[in-house]
Image (cartoon, rainbow, N blue to C red; front, side, top):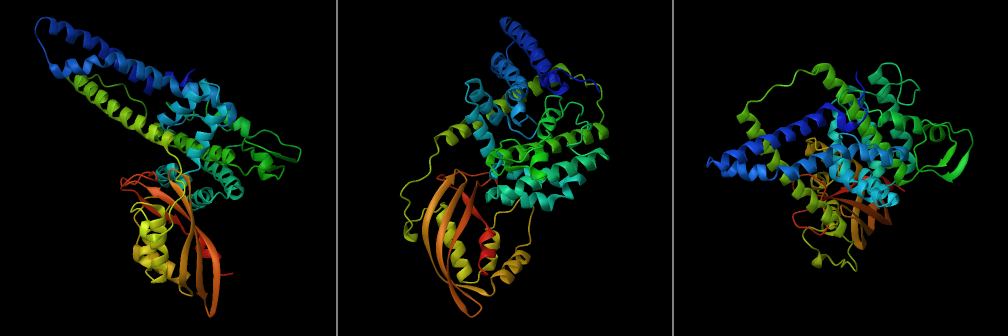
Length: 433
């Protein structure tokens, strides 16, 4: 396997640059024909955008290398599952000497519901699907900020998955080769680089905060303060990168590289025009998304009177959950639970599970005490409840952690219309005492 010096030199990136260079030449031909009165307004418009497209392609193709040069030593690497706008934002901050700000947006991303849509990727390959239940638990622990439990779990999942894929050695073994053809994650500046950092020897007990997931220090009980957002985020980012490496290996084995098909002049024109249009649409959406995130602010002085709840607010959904519990509408509760993946569920079966959990915990009354917007897609609703546990009446304060979803199933944003909310069902299990 030939090792490329830079990620930008990988075949997939080289092809894009070559295509744009070719398009530039075709564009000159079109302009030449236009000079003689042979015109096509659609093509002229498309090719007028090629200079900007060339700049954008050059920018995006070098982005993973720039990202790794800034962040690999800090435990973050570029990989196929990491979206370009996130990398772009992080690199922009790092270029302006704001490494701390860049790490914050990376950690926020990899410890939030923004990674939920990626989870289905873990159902595909055996090394991950067999561990899917553990991955689900780590995801839930992450959202609930139980960082002390999800860090060791993620480290063992990473190590075990790599062991199954390599058939001999885990992620942290000295001689494990984490390379694949045409793979961003498996480039020498990627997984191999952070593996050596994470596997550093930790021979003394350390009670100071650490911000890298040192496997030996954490799993052998030498690093005691590892339970923070940066360490968790780096574990998740690494797990996604390992999955991308494994997928690249599978793709290489099942579909070895074949000589590139030579497109006709007409096919090249059509493909180029489609690429330009798709890129422009993606860019507009991406810029809008980041602008919305940058401008988002948590609400202040939130009205907790039910009659004043906004239709798309987390507090309205929290109120609905409590009402459903009070009325023993377990099916509606089942529909509103936040789940790890978008896999279709049997509502009747899930409602049965909730019935068995709440059957002897009958809600008598409830009142929303406070609402706190923690992030664009996360709010916490604190309630005072009175419920009957068997023959005893109990009072308790519970917190519902609410997750926002857009109508397309992706992460939503608090304050926008047509948003729906789900909750993490952790409070169920604190009602027995």
